[in-house]
Length: 425
Image (tube, rainbow, N blue to C red; front, side):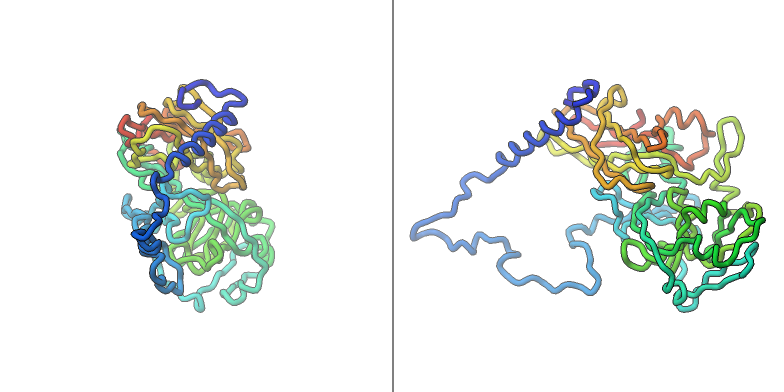
């Protein structure tokens, strides 16, 4: 059993899952209420009196736009204003599937959320092109669209664990909630760029948003032609204002900051523009003092969502499911390993399909908890062979004040009372 901290065997995961299922069935049978048989005889109460209130009267009306149950009112994003701008983090600790609801998708706003009339908004493509073009939304809606499922992650996600000398006792969402996954629908940028006619000297594209700070980033033209999308829909509905309504740039697997929201201009150029948004906060400083700029890809990463920070295991000892999410900006997830002893031993977790390219992948592993202290960790490997590093290894590469692209292994400490806290291991 994993709970006995033994090295994994080729058949270990299968045996663990079989034991987990057998024990779960036994637990379910034991949980059936005793003495719940219906009463009979002349003094028996009407069956209807024992029914729950919801079964005694007709329910209320629905709403034009569906809302979560009132009992889920606490499942919301959390906001912080670190570095002077607004960050809304997704409550990953409550997520079980791989698609983040639109209302819980993380968002970072450097200059607030603009209110844009879609009837007046246009996208302009100009610069090193043969035919400068301008598209309004009505025209764009006539183009063929594609749908792709991808994660988005802020370059500064998990900054607290990268910078703080001591592990902060926060929830997973507060520590690493600047990442979400959705189905995006829109027009491949290659369609629009090729329609404009690219000149031989064209190498880069400056993407600019229609927000108050004219947020802009330089991207390699070759990458935009290969993967870039003009996203118009998210999870089947029009983009929400906090996600760039009426249109945004989507670059799968790249740091969130290059996925320019409220996109209104693509300027084709021969060299990077070195804008304010790519020359300061989003430039990496290595331990040797050198600069690592244009580090676009988000590296392989995983987090355990349950049990996780500030959650508490019930007092009942027995089998629990360790579950979480893994993703990589380089491709698909190939493997996730889980440790309950701070990395002394590892067991291979089950990956739940579909395992998509540059998207969330859910993993689970049964765990027998007997009330002992434990340190839970997950370590992901992607299809390119990149392995999630330890915190010590990541910190040895970057300067002490660096925090962007932090993808080190995340650890949770489980106390004897079942309370879970963030920790470093």
